[in-house]
Image (cartoon, rainbow, N blue to C red; front, side, top):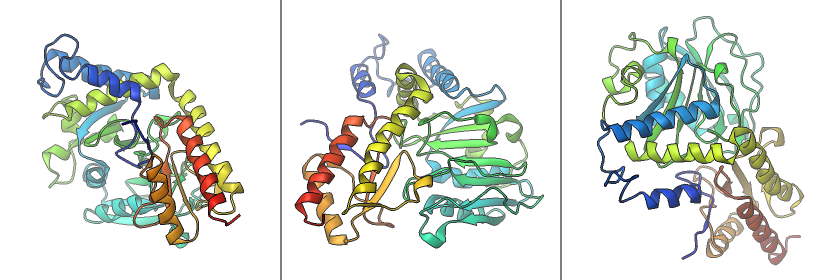
Length: 362
């Protein structure tokens, strides 16, 4: 069977070159006689894999030496708790609510301290990014938290909030490595890799060293202490070995493609194909304020739930998978991450144009 165009929000499409290379190495990784799935994380071979992955990521993002890179188990939802456990010295933090994941992160943080809602776009179903240029930030806030790209709602912070000197913590799961990133603007940024980089089950945490402390909340589990992982170079326990291996291959693929500047150019080009169609369509409509649109996740609707369902079904039959919108929003959503080829986006637009003509709403 031919590969489909997979528009899933995550786990999501990975580069075919990476999948083929991993398949070739499945039984025997570079002559060692075993799969990466089978080898000890304490072995010299695996030590090379994880160290090379970290260096390639540092090269791609130009990560300064005073930031630690941690590869740990779990997804972003686990970090919703580890952030306040590790960073809430004053038991108070500010959260900007731009979607379901920021909302969930704030709810989790409330277990451990006071959460100040600094801004929200809930009034218009999270279809825009609020103005964060002059937030009312208390002096005793430990950090300001955002979800930078909102997978469900298709919005993106194109300008980071003015945190007035407070450390910015950002969930970048669904825009990770899609464009250049100035790491120095963050105290911490993190990603569940299953959206744009690798298989589910791995997190990448990038944290400024002074935020990695012994003094964490007293009931913080050992496995959720950033210092434990930093001191042990992500090898305190058995890490998600195969996931890190795949991430490492994606990092090399990104380097070979020309780095993050080139990926941003390609991603803008791909997104423009879809957004330009939506802007002129008489049947389909984008749901996000244009200046806040994500390059990665594009939600759209027809305005008729039955017609939406018909479109998703016919799209699936034509080889376009996972276009149904999130259950909390409805409609459709096309996630067009780094590994989605331009040809896939153009094929989707051609199908949408055909569907529009056949359904008589022009």
